[in-house]
Length: 50
Image 1 (cartoon, rainbow, N blue to C red):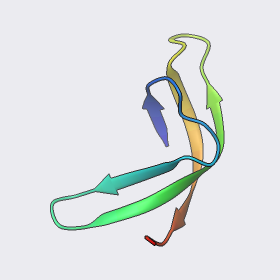
Image 2 (image 1 turned 45 degrees about the vertical axis):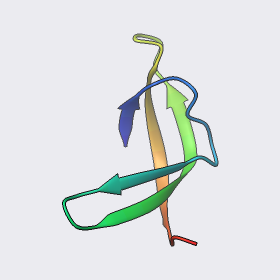
Image 3 (image 1 turned 120 degrees about the horizontal axis):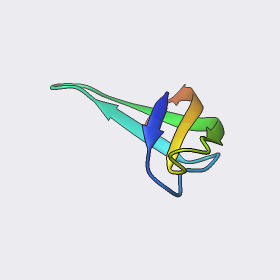
């Protein structure tokens, strides 16, 4: 997944939603681009909601 925003790190959770469903993913690995510095690409692992 690619995204933009500072502070996302390995171990964080991302919730993706559509109109009726939500799925939770954990950031397994993340790399920030050099330009723009707040753009990143991450490897996500789907996890169950607790």
